[in-house]
Amino acid sequence: MKLFSNKKTIGYFFILPWIIGFLVFTIIPIGYSIYLSFNDVTITATGIETSWIGVANFTRVITEDMDFIRLVGDFFIETIISVPLIIILALVMALLLNQKVKGRGFFRTIFFLPVIINSGPVLNMLIDLELTSIPALQNYDFFWTLQAASGNIFVDVLLFVLNNFILFLWLAGVQILIFLAALQKTDVGIYEAARIDGASTWEIFWRITLPGLMPMILVNIIYTTVMYSMSALNQITDHISANMFRLDTGFGYTSALSWIYFIIILITLGLLVVGFLVFERKGKR
View 1 (cartoon, rainbow, N blue to C red):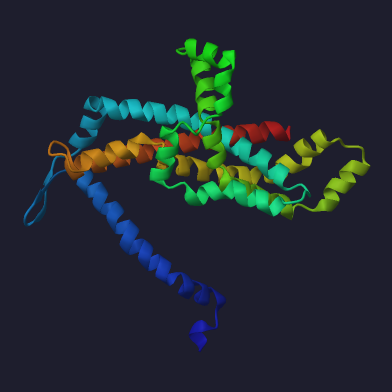
View 2: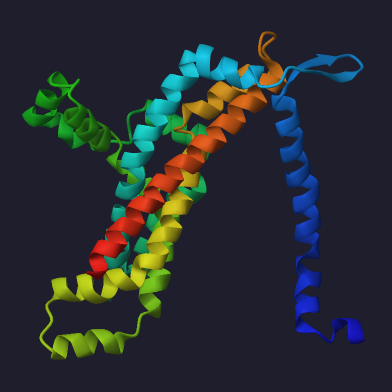
């Protein structure tokens, strides 16, 4: 058939179910949520009733919902700290797991297992049991000294990292696989040539390995930011869900919350990407 003689036509035919699903189950709900955010929504026995109120929902979020503002500030700070740290840990683990050691496949599986088992309730339970930090740290005086000095921004950041270090490793499974895939595609001959020319391991990493991983670092920044914004650690999603069925807020107010949160995620992601591009540009000099 001439219809299927063109490879592009065959490609579009195979992705047609996804396109239809995206238009029906994603685009339409997105458009409807935008519409609801500008309305006062009431659920009655006969269905959903809307009353146009313009930007009143957005104004109310910004001027009255102090809990949301506080959660957004916490999310922004935690994301700026957590995303680079998760990516650095994933890169270090990928470099170690890429070495030719016995049981390499087993260790790769171990690091990816948390991605499979860490659903929202499981992750919250582990956090409640204080299993996301390194228990041995509490046996050292410096940890309690830091606790006593909490309130200083640098001390608070350090405590946040120490208290969530294990969690960051759990959240790095997919990123490790992405880095491993990139490392295994690198031509081994490049490393051999660099060693023959007298390059040290450190120089090889900065001049060959890291520049080759830059596209994957950008991919991981985007993935990690989106993942972190939707994880069980994020209390903003709980706040949005809690307002959905309240009589004084409802679907319209919740839709406005969701769109403001979406814009904040885009801004946070943009700052991280810009920071990465600046770092990459300086590295090329």
